[in-house]
Image 1 (cartoon, rainbow, N blue to C red):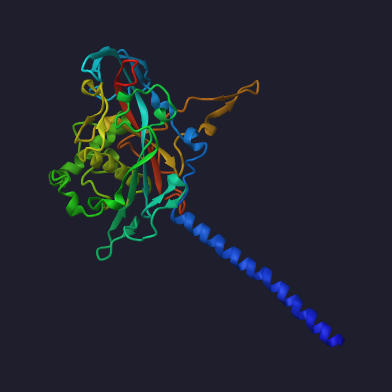
Image 2: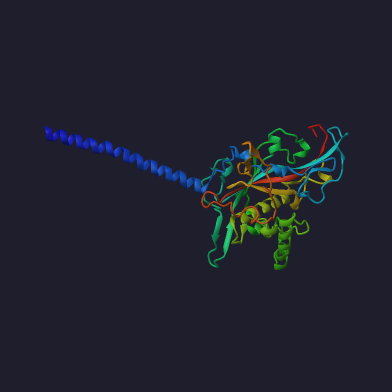
Length: 375
């Protein structure tokens, strides 16, 4: 009897010890799956304090009113900005409404450049589709051993000042969007991954596919890094490379910040060609954005939001002798199209979870301030 009782106790002990082991194995497998998901489709942590602390608020300046510059330390005004003090726009009944001119750099769009198709770091690492077609990243081409880079992108409307219900009028918000909205996906656009189809959107790419045109981009690189992009060299994206063709394929062995920035510039150029982006400064744009088939490079600035934000208010906090904390105005936390990545971006890649990028697009906007939000 004692032997039977001992056997029963041993069997019971083994059973109860086995159950926690099974739970541990399941927990480990679940943890590994979660980690793998984060590596393939990371979370940009956009829906937190980064929505405010990650925004480079100093990019708002310079602000212009009545044709006069209120604050301008770096002369960051595009060529062709209006010099008018007063303006007039047609109302709903065709009668002119008079106002004063105003201009500023406003956050307008978000572009996420991702390796995994249908992955959205902005939406917390959500994948819209589990398909593996059009997988991107940096890879070696079979056969010739050259390097190739390809990324997908998602284009978001992000009129932050309109979302915060600040001073933006309808005619100062080209496109009219007032919320965070996905406007375009490269996975649904065959011209983004097939260069032959992209040729029909930008046939002039043939003219700039030569060593002389590429060599001219070094001038744009130097000028952009020192001051601002050159409008005359419209086929160049400064230090990032040739703006043409408007596709996601790059024959490059450059860094991830440079490659993703070049693709971001191509995205904007492609959307201008498709009449999905507007010119928002100059005398002709005071009453609303204008369709402009060529990208106005001086109209845009970029600021990295992910993986490491260019604007970080915590790094700019200081404590004086009295123990009082002060936060300096964010400075040098956005950059021109084509500005050298050695000034702002080469340290912003995190292997694994930080190889996808999210850029905040600042758009210089001028408009006629009439005080009437219907115009």
